[in-house]
Amino acid sequence: METFFYTIIFIIGTFFGSFYTLAVYRIPKREDILLKHSYCPNCNHKLGFLDLFPIFSYIFLGGKCRYCKEKIRPRYLILEVLSGILFVALAYLMGLSIKHLEVFKIIEYCFMILYLTFIILMIGIDLENKKIDKAVNIYGIVISIMYMLYLCIVEKANIYRYSIYLVLYILILTLDTVTLKKYAKSPYVNGILLSIITMAIMTGEYITISSIIYSLLVIVMYLLLYKIKNKKKRKNVKIDIKKSKEMPIGFYLGISNILVILVVLLYLKLMI
Figure: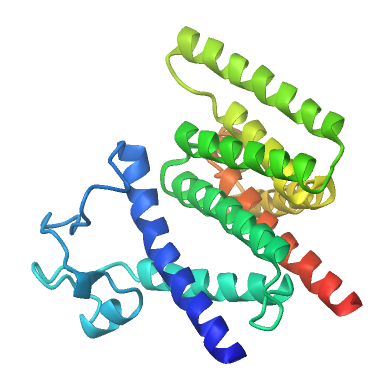
């Protein structure tokens, strides 16, 4: 029964993974991600059910579009598989099983899935477009407020602690609006700050700070390796500055956050 239970969760995870690839592609283009029918980005042909079943469709179609025979990027298959594995890993590490289907555990798991959706969309869009999409951040703010209400009402958490986060949200969103009006664009830094606040609410300060530290270490190592590889003394200074500005910080921050969450949950699982 446990195997069947986790298999179902894996399948659900793969469908979420399929949705993530769609959302990462459409959100920056401001296309509808819920009602608009899926289509091939090459020939624009509407896709049928057999074209959309995660993992199996990719395998049976040979990694090509059924209609125009254009190759489908392997990342679709990879993300679906990884998403399924992530869903199962979280369920197991959070103690969710067919024998222990407690209401509170299910609610916590659902909140974590909603949060990971936010993180994965941030990762994908930042990697593809070097952008922290405001719509994704708004989604993150909404689920974090829902989570705060749940903690304060059901688990009687300290309301004053979360009030500070709400004030920070308001301040940064106000700053973002002012900057948008003045420069006609939403600053990348403001997006990162909003993401960090959402992280702190949903995963706690320890995991958030650890995620920031590890992502910064990875970025510094990457820049050092880049500098060593392209060592041209003074001529390379401007290139290094430009390269650092092009770094998808949200991507590294999100990946670090997911890994830290899994490590912390594994540690807690082993300690029980």
